[in-house]
Image (tube, rainbow, N blue to C red; front, side):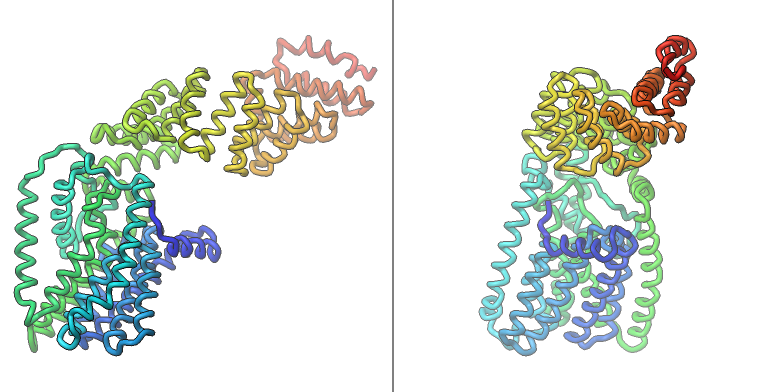
Length: 612
């Protein structure tokens, strides 16, 4: 639900250069972040002439633990790439303020456009330019206010267009919450509390988490006036007075605080996107303003030895920040570590329980997966994705009836959820209720025609209810969506074999073995298809490779006579062709049969064994 084409291109370029080597992608993120720190220092040092304060602000920005999420989470490349063009825009704007020209104006515009193509967070940049006109560029003292506003009108037009596209795409993608789900009054409350929480996290970065549940979305409770809201309002009022009152003598205090407050507006939750109350990554650019106010404020208040002590303390403070950032970055090394860390911060984090359950499920650890998913649902019964994930887990655990209950519960919350419709159809197929399964799967495909799983499952329904033409049509659609998916190749091969179209079955099993060379079912079925086509040498080779592996096909585990009968058929076909290997295959067929069936099979193969 994001529109950031330049960020997508950046990821695509990384894959072209490095493949999916995660380390290389992380290195690119780290380099971009370092460049952003350098760009921030160059801008502040150039415009303020205060090298010490500028360097300290840049270093705090680079090493602060709140940055870990933006750098360690590869998909947050949009923060870093958007930040790079933010810094370039600041430098271009500083040059434009020194000596205005159409070239400098174009450079600022280009940086803004490229930044918006990375992340719409840059919609606040023209407002930041106005703040910088107050300090440190001091343009209002030598340029009429109307002219300064007029030059920014094209930039405001750009951000209006970007904002429109962003809201449209996120609404279409289902990422935004409705006013009914999160009324504006509660959004405002969360915005005030989160603004204070970000200040706290900047000054005391403890108990950081990858996800902070929104209190209203989590519990559904609608108690607007609570003590923490009053505390947040008072803290913001006091801080605003401290920063804004001395703005004439120390304009950097007001500019820094306004930078912080203003750049938070797109991500503070007034337009609720996602289920979180706040996120560490949202502080990437706003925190710069807060630290400008703090560092330049301290440097302006002390002189002589006091200034030396302040600089020393600032440098020493970087050490614990860097150590905490290292620790926070390490949380991202593994999904289980990351989600467990979130539960250490807040045991009632329903999203962390859900995500931990999904990871355990993917690892095949179904018992702890079910525990965490059910705990997530205890905390938030209306969590539709947790219900869907639990349904998938129960299907894997061989409990389709329970899974169907979870999928139905998910659909009561969201009747048009394609994955839940497909999950319900899958569970019903396993229960043998094909008519009901068909209804769910058709509804799913109506909503999302390009869903591979639904097309594949619907093909299975038709294959098992005697409608081969319809089954093949849906299997073919599934194969177009995911040409290299093994299950659809297996389904097509089995369908053609059932119709005794062994040439097409052989081709599908060949294609399946290219994807899964160790698939004994596919190899045996290939041998069987070749046998029926009279390609006896190929059939013998495929049967031989399966027998040599020591792993029989799944059909043989259900019916031990399957292998014996197929080998007997091969022996008889070879005998009819005058192949001397027929007797050897006849003996192997008898040896592989269950003891009570060997006499009948021996009688059947008597002519082959006697060589007549």
